[in-house]
Image (cartoon, rainbow, N blue to C red; front, top):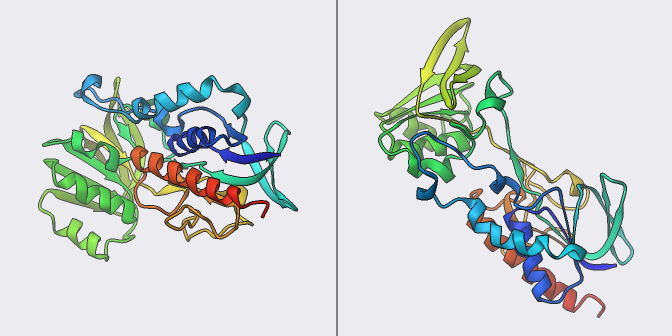
Length: 301
């Protein structure tokens, strides 16, 4: 039986694993890859790679260290977590099972996709999925945001602080009545296209235009980049029956990364912490590992 199993090899999971190894815990990282979403880097025609510090660079050091510690990681996907008498059992897609005394869930969250023609072709090539990460690149530029929830409104308001123009494609009225929504509606450099649906993404090497429709009418939007902000999908299903989750499906944690179930900890984008940022996930992973270590010190007492 392992002391600790960590699910997910993104920034939070990698950091937690390194901390666990340094605490001499018998730890196992179960992940499909190393790096998670940091493996996907936004490419823009007007941004030189050397001018941007990417999440990939931040976590590469951890990923390289884990890659050589073969006894502490397995490339597989955890699909089920069950409570057993003396801990937990994790079942994977490949049919393997592993038992442990404590678990850290760091499975992350996925961007909600548009599912329209052109999206796969231009994903991360002008078609962006995190304004909070890339907004500083768009000083005095023209951008489009797609979405009508708090996440889209926050992204629109942030981009409007530096962009020349922001167009918000809001499929419904959504949260436009909120305080943030009113800020967006009142801004001079924001145009709100309410009730429009995205039909397709077109371009050359990069996304250049967005085709949107409303009541049969088609509108073509040209911009320097397009931000899809349709809320994230937390990968928390494997512990649905064990821990408390919020309305968005995120695992609820306290300031020590403890969940509602003793022995289960969580970190990163799968939780209800603020902002999906690499550096925040790194810190949360470290906290989760330290809290889990403290829990394990008293496990048999």
